[in-house]
Image (cartoon, rainbow, N blue to C red):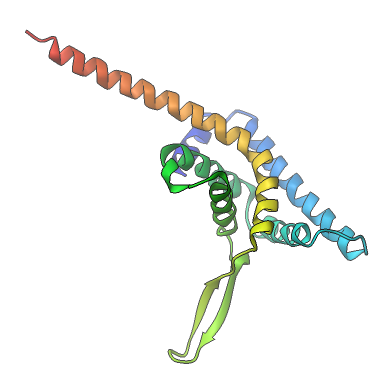
Length: 174
């Protein structure tokens, strides 16, 4: 997340950040429209309606920039630590979980009689609902995420070239 925030600070004047905010807000409005149509009697897929409900809750509870930074950070993590994700579905599942984890919309509370305390529990979504949400998030934020990966890769390669040239200069000492 620090890398994403540093890239945003470095390119603060770039309009892509406000455009991403707008795209996220458009996604939440689209989810609200799906829910409104469903509540007005239009039939819909169960997983799409549930996904729309989750995105709407998230849109109301979390600032767009926070969602964007988290999603873009997940793309950087995919590049930096690809072994953490066994497949594209595993990545998209974690992407949705991290975005949903930004607020308490995915948390339930229950009373533990043994300890006499309230316990929080993470409410998992069914896999089909997760795939619907990921199918909405990836087109909205994925392109910029991949561009950030390219930029970080270029920065890393430049850093490695500096180290390599230093080592070459040390080895050339006589």
